[in-house]
Image (tube, rainbow, N blue to C red; front, top):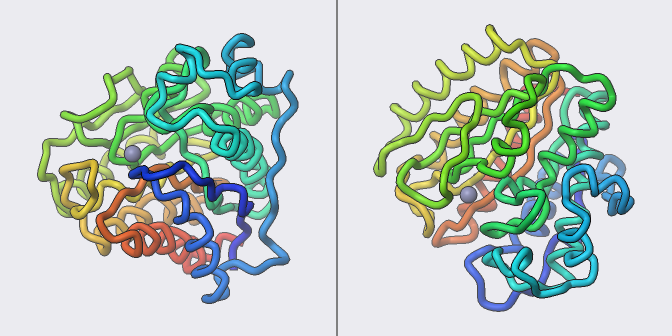
Length: 297
Ligand SMILES: [Zn+2]
C-alpha cells in the first residue's frame, strides 16, 4: 500500500478532446480495487494561496487564470479556458506539493494527477496552465532540500520546468523525450532527444545510463518523477514505440534505486493518449504497482 494524492475534481468536462481527464478516477478505482491505495491514505489536495502561487506565476497571468479570462496568456494553451480545468490545475499544484510532504515522511507518494510541465510563469502551453512540478520544487527548496532531481520521462520535453530552473543549480532537470515533436525545446540539465520509432531496448539503455550518472554525480535528496504514459507505441500524439512492459521496466529503473537509497520520490502522471484509454490507465497503474512492490513505506 502506498500513500496517494487525489481528488475527483481532476476529472473535468473539456468537451471532445484528446486529453482523457477520466483517466484519473479510473486509476483511482483500479488501484483501490487492488488494495495498492486505500481511502485512509489517499489525501485530498488544496488550492495554494494566491501569494504562494505568485512564486511560480506572474501576477497578471495569475489574475487571468483566477478570473477564467481568455487572454493571450491563457489562450496559448490547447485546452478550453474553463473554470473546471483551471481549478483542477490549481489543485494539482497543491497536490504535487502535498505529495512531496508525504514523501518526505513516508519515502514516496503517488499523485494521481499533475505533471503539467509545459506551463510557463507568463503563459499557458500545451495542455498546461500551471506547472505543479515547479511549484513543489520551489517549496521544497524553501524547506532546505538542496538537490532535487526532476526525472521527466513523458513523451514530450519538460520545457516549462527546464526553463524555470535553468539557472537553479539545486534542481537538476532531466528529460528523455521524442526529439522531433512539440514543444520547442528548452535546455534541461540533461536532455535525451530520441528518434521516432525508438523502442524498449534503446530507451531503457539510455535511461539507465542517464540515471546512473544523475544518482552518482548529482546525488539527489529528492526525486520528482514525471511518469508520462505517452511514450507508448499506441499513443495518438507520439512516435516512440515503448511497450507496456517496457514502460513498467522504465518505472523500475527510476523508482527502484530511489527507494533502495532512501531518496524520497513522488510520481506525477503527465500525459497519456493511447488509442485505448484502458492502456493509458494500465501504464499509470503499473507505476503505482512498482512503487508498491518496492515497498517505499
Ligand atoms: Zn506528454
